[in-house]
Length: 212
Ligand code: MD3
Ligand code: FE
Image 1: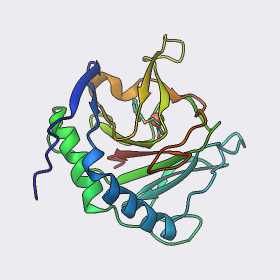
Image 2 (image 1 turned 90 degrees about the vertical axis):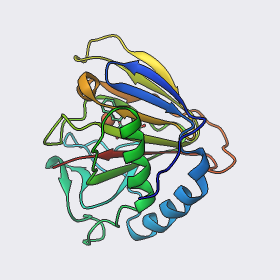
Image 3 (image 1 turned 60 degrees about the horizontal axis):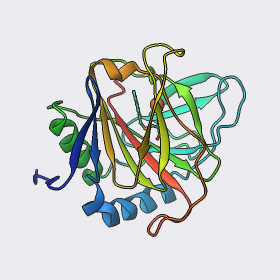
Image 4 (image 1 turned 90 degrees about the horizontal axis):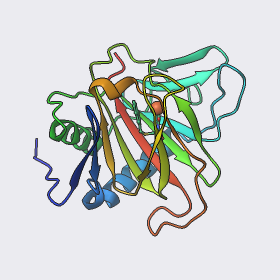
């Protein structure tokens, strides 16, 4: 595997086990966008429904062997896309290589994601405070890529009531969430209107996980 260099990216500790790699993706933005276009032609973005019956304001798709889905039956990982009835598109090598490189820089050496959830935010879309706990083994970190419009990310604690700290996630940023932070509550505030030169009026977030 070619070693992908993150020279120039600042590494900011967010809390025990969580690192923000500022601008980590900037050299790869064109290639990332090309891959995103190709795989969303195969499995398009869709608004999923929560078990409680709410349509999510964030639209989603997945790539890789498993994809996160929600419907009236609950949250789970699925090997097939319920919209197309086919497997999710393959995870591009560039995606997994960059996610692995980011994880290793943050001290998680053999990160091997089998799921990549792709979230699309348009102005007004948000993700309420939640925990990520549909995966089988919480010792694996989660790696997130942010592209497009900036968003305010609220980072909480072990309980829903814990105070939150807001962080700005911008185009090109990567965050690695491991250790104690892996189960912390978090959310994205309603996206503000704006225009991004490469991405237009949207924000796309990719989260890489070991689901199994
Ligand atoms: C902190 N996505 O897909 S990425 C999600 O920007 C999700 O779309 C947000 O929360 C987004 O579940 C936030 C940052 C993130 C992802 C996973 C985490 C932060 C996390 C898991 C544990 C703690
Ligand atoms: Fe989450």
